[in-house]
Image (cartoon, rainbow, N blue to C red; front, side, top):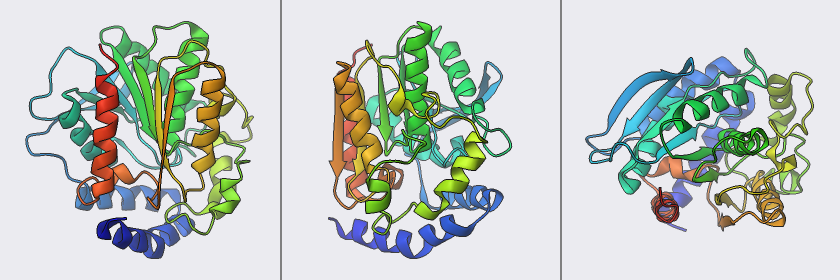
Length: 295
């Protein structure tokens, strides 16, 4: 463990986790937007462009030298389906754009509780269809957005749409029943996510709908014939087993799946690529995997 990671874990446990445990959605949104501007920085020369796809606001991110016309990264941000935006995650995608030479598109999909499920999967699929009509697509996301990317993959397969080249997810939320052992086993050692808010998050997002719907919980989806999937998660996260069980389900359905379980890292640690050696290494590893997808 790097000294930067040890210091960050303490800060997250003492400051960020208590804030996530008590703040209302509107305060969470404002706080995350502010902190992302302060702490997450893109490589110099990055270009941002706002646009819309199928009526969904999006933000394009291109690092200096990123090629146009090739495969596009369609990235779905995390935030428990309640907060987060293209702005909070664009610096990380700028770094990934620099590593891969690919442009990234970040939708600002509708958020709960104002827009409960299935608004999020509807927006994600609308953006995917619009992009896939002109580009090869690599689909990705983190946390709830990672679950959303996998749920979108399920829907792409179910509806017979053209497939993405591959799908990746950081610390994905794949099971809205929250029945995995790690939810309780790691409740204390997770440095970011407060397990005590799970019930409220379910209520805000699902609004009484079935938590086993694969559009909300891709763990219960069908993935036969899917393209390669790459996932990573920390061993101390409450969502550890969401990734572990998703990996096993994909392999059982003969999908090429790669899972990396990292030690002592916080939830979605690649966001901290400016300061964490571990985050930089993860992004480099993902970029190498993307290079093998072709397109």
